[in-house]
Image (cartoon, rainbow, N blue to C red; front, side):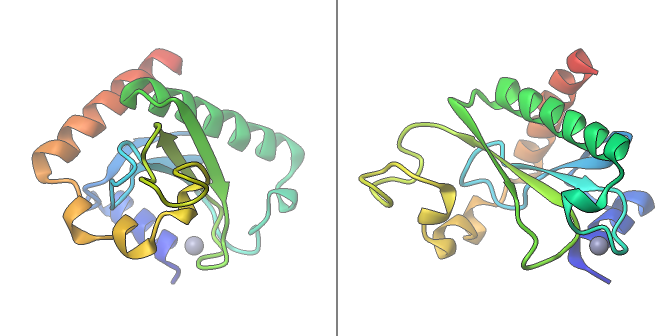
Amino acid sequence: MCLICDRIKMIKDGTNPYFVKELETGYVVIGDNQHFRGYTLFLYKHHGDKTELFHLAPTERAKFLEEMTIVAEAVSKAFGAEKINYELLGMGEAHLHWHLFPRVSGDIENYGNNGRGPVWWYPMEKMYSDDNRPGEEQLADMKCRLLEELKKLI
Ligand SMILES: [Zn+2]
């Protein structure tokens, strides 16, 4: 089973502490690591052989993109982003999932082009350091804020 399917199974079992909300095409979850405060993922509900946006039927794709956009807006409002960065990658896990990074000036310190550039110019070991995992209270607060903004938009 892939990592994303694992996390979705946890949501269905009621054991995923990062789960925020189920939408028609996917699940909203807070990211495990929070160097980029408010980092959120939107996990497509199905895996199978649909691993590219162009594998989805047009109506399904439109809905998936529309919902991702709503999640991005909610993330932006909940966490005060200057800009949202969107990533749909999948070389690690082919399961369709959006990474939504709220960006603020200075968040990659002086890495990249004098502190400007994509999130992946920030060192991986710092981005995924255990010391930026949200505590229980912080996670509860983030989920609450994001859910509140989502409810206003849906
Ligand atoms: Zn999967």
